[in-house]
Amino acid sequence: TRYNTNATVAENLMFGTPVGGAFDLERLAESPYVTRVLDTVGLTQDLLVMGRQVAATMVELFADLPPDHEFFRQFSFISADSLPDFQALLAKVPQERLGELKPEERLAFLSLPFKLIPTRHRLGLIDEAFQARILQAREAFARDLPVELKDSVEFFDEERYNAAATLQDNILFGKIAYGQAEGAERIGAVLSEVIESESLRETIITVGLDFQAGIGGSRLSGAQRQKLSIARSVLKQPDVLIISEGTASLDAGAQTRVMERLRKVFTGRGLIWVLHRATLAKDFDHVLVMQGGRVVEQGEFKALAEPGTKLRKMLDAE
Image (cartoon, rainbow, N blue to C red; front, top):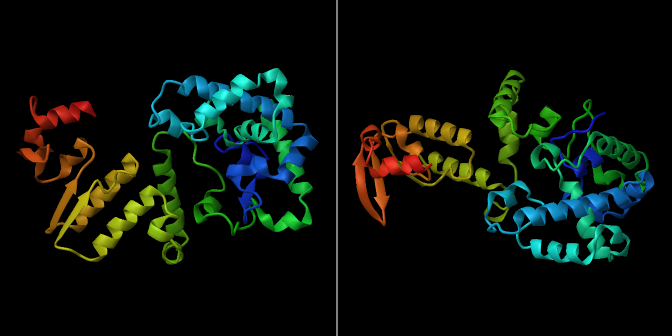
C-alpha cells in the first residue's frame, strides 16, 4: 500500500468510493468519524497547521489576481469569493492561537489540506513523513469503520470490481499523472485497446447510453455536454452542419480528433465551424475571418496566413 501523489489527501485517506452522503470527498473534514480517526492517529493538529499554511499561501498568491485567473482553476479548493474570508481569518488567528478557533473557523482551515494533490499543487507540504501518517489513518479508517457506516464506502480492491466507481477507474485502478504531456490521450488510447481486446466496447456503449444526464445535462461535464450535442446533430444526418465553438471545452487533443472525424463524416456535405482558435482553421477548404460582425478576409488558409493579414495577426497572438 502506498500514497498516490496524483490523488487528493481525502482520496488517499479513504482509499475507496463514497456511497451516499456520509463521506462526501469534498466535505470529508465535516465527518465526525473522520475527525475521530484523525484524533486517533494524531493528525488533527498537523492538518490544522497545514490548513492555515495553505490559506496563507493562497491569500498571498491570489491577492492581486482577477477572479478568472488560471491560478483559481489550478488551486480549485479556494475560490475568489472565499479569499476575503480566509484573509480575515488569518489576521484574526495567528498560528500559535489555533486552539482558540471557533468550530466553523476550525473547519475552514481543516478542510483545505484534504484537497491537496502534491503533483498538481506543488506547495511542498505533503512530504514522505506526512504521506506515511495518512496511510496509517487509512488503515484505521477501514479497520474501525462502524457497522452503520459499512455501506457508505466501497473500498478499492484490485481483485474486486468497485460498483461505486466509474468503468475507467475500475480498469485503471489508479490516477492519470499530472503534468505528463498528452498523458490523458495516451491512457485513453491504451484503454481503448484494452476494451477492444476484451470485446467490451458495445457493452460499455450500451451502459453509457442508459446513464441519466440530468436536467440540461447537469450531471455531465462541459466537455461531455459538447460532445453529446455534436453527436445528436450528426445522428440527424444534415446536409449542412453548423457548429459554433463546439469544442471549446475539450482539450487540444480531443478537439483535433473530433474535428478530423467530423470532416471525414461530412465529406461531400457542408461543415461550417465557428472556431475559437485560428490555428484550427488550417484543415478547412475555405476560411472566413470576421471582425465586428463583418467578413474582412476569406480564402484558403495558406493564402490568408501570409504576413500582414488579419488571420496572420490572430495566429501570432495565440
